[in-house]
Image (cartoon, rainbow, N blue to C red; front, side):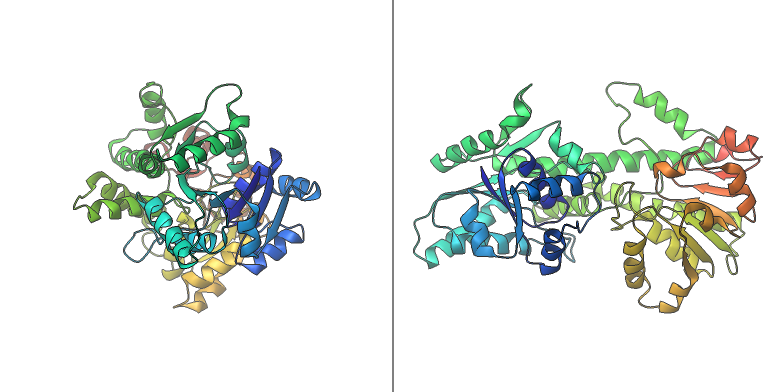
Length: 457
């Protein structure tokens, strides 16, 4: 099939590359000339394991192309995927300007039937707005071209997006019941047929339910994370081990183990903005989603937990102290630092007079860009950040190590070298990578999340 992908971010580029891998003829459009130049020169503008190889293979086979030519993109695809950003607006609602601009461009140039697929995460009712934008453009041209707007939300995890796309646990598609909607359903069924050969993975529903499903899924996952973080904070006070609790409740099949890991807060581009957007949608209907308000508040507080533990350990005297930070991205296997917990911790340390040495396997360059934004009001603090070339170098002369991102490379370090390089053998583990009992044996002072009863040596 001929497919157009509008937007070459995480969702668009992964979707386009994977659909090309399945034999489709894919045209990827982006208005950012820099991104297109990178892609056409053989590079990848984002870090996503496995993506570069798939893009290279399909570019060589002629199954994927990248361009800023809007008219050519509309002419190419019988299915037009809108996969542009929906950043949070000032009031927390999803900003749909890029989605609607993409729709208007399709309406401006389309001459025959098109299936327009909302792949971006969008609020309930967005398909109606996309359809209105399309009709408006078509009416201005007095065009009789027909279309159907479909909701096909993505469920990709950054760092595992290629695997998630190629081996989906579910495919959610929302279509309407019109003649055009039935035609769109047939085309989407054909497009996703390769994923349904062993068993049916597609969940068909109305458009609004499909739009709602994406937000509901992310809100549920965010809720589980914040719930465990609240329990972890209580465990620190009552003398319980949150890891033992996690195993105890996760063994219940009604609960399960997924997203029950206590830590220093969630980040990224999805959970924070999607929770806010769902709250905003509720407010438009005169409702308050009290649980989600609490989820957001708990997460904001949780990002301060590591800093609070460090402050308490050093008697609120951080001037002249130096800390090593392992992990800057909001999660492993990505360079994405949007809403990352590391930014909150580093901001608190620097603004209280400390210096830091930081290391992350892939996000060092992104960190330099992000920190310039974070400290625009105090650019002199940028001089107090040292970028280490490896994790052990970051430890040199540090008063303690703080772990913020659970990269596999951090799970089994040479602890003798860790102790030798640190001024004091103190670790603040924001992801509970290590066992307190092992740290005690190694004579390392260990502060986990919800495991503090086990840290004393």
